[in-house]
Length: 418
Ligand code: UDP
Image 1 (cartoon, rainbow, N blue to C red):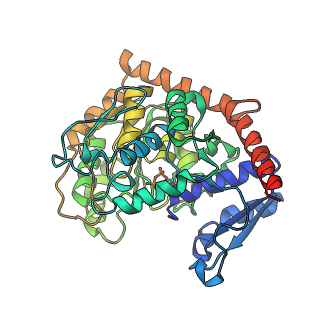
Image 2 (cartoon, rainbow, N blue to C red; image 1 turned 90 degrees about the vertical axis):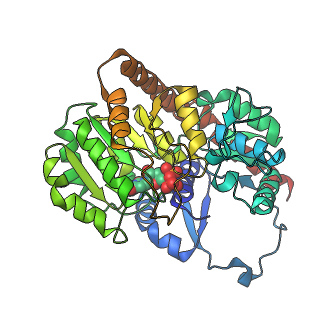
């Protein structure tokens, strides 16, 4: 699926592989290529060894041969090791098919640490009623590949990666956090799409804020938050009295949110709140020293970007494997607090009730951003993981070495197959 959460790390991966000496061909459809204009221009200007191949959709028109080309195949689905492992175990054991109570706690057998889940927290590619066959077919194909690539790093989730290798019966290459391939704010802000606001103005605003004082609120590229919930979130941010940047993707579909923002809210918070409508230069913002917390929907890319930023998180999963990423952050890494989501936020269901109250938002922001000891411990841990992430990524780190070994091994396989 050409979702942004898949394409963005693939562009980072292309950059990394090329920087490590590989010749990269980036195959995509014309419409998706148009979104990557900034990336393509940057790669061309820098002379990076990435070639873009536009594949007109559907590919079958071209009569491509099926599996004859002898090119080694790697699986990259964009999940972390923790969530990938849960996904495979759920599928292999048909864990959810016969569960009738959405809130019944289910133990994940063979998981390296104690893990209990409800069906309500397993949406998307983990479980869609009636789609088990497609999911299992996808996993079957993945299992036939020559290896798994993960946008994570060994030191972050060692036991889960090792266990995933055993379950998948193949090498799992951790090559991340791939977002660290961005070293200047230009390439950082061009990631995924063109920012919908003036980046210089945003940086200026951030520069004017105290270090660690701002909470960044963003729910990725796909999550649809209902208008009522957006208003409630805004009121919670207002009540917290903390500075914030809030990325809103309500769009023209929800004019009531625009009306509500204009009807006093923006005026009341204008000294400490910045609202971004549309695409935000997320990595550029997250890595600014003014950011002290990240309220996230727990998409894996956002989560790993938050880890690299060294900031604690407020977790607000919506769907897909986001509830699992929340568990990794809150229960394993212990660098975040939950806002309290019990189940999925459905697409297109505008009647849905408010699932997180303004009080819950305010409490979570206070828990994360206050000066007490518990918050300080969260901050210290988050900083520590950011240091580990950079070590893994930099020369001779685990991910750095994995990229080199991966290129070598794929080269050997291609040579062997002639
Ligand atoms: N992103 C961004 N600006 C936005 C929204 C998202 O740059 O306004 C980027 C974000 O940095 C991340 C990706 O889009 O790299 C979203 O991927 P993620 O896995 O977090 O969530 P998804 O959008 O797939 O739900």
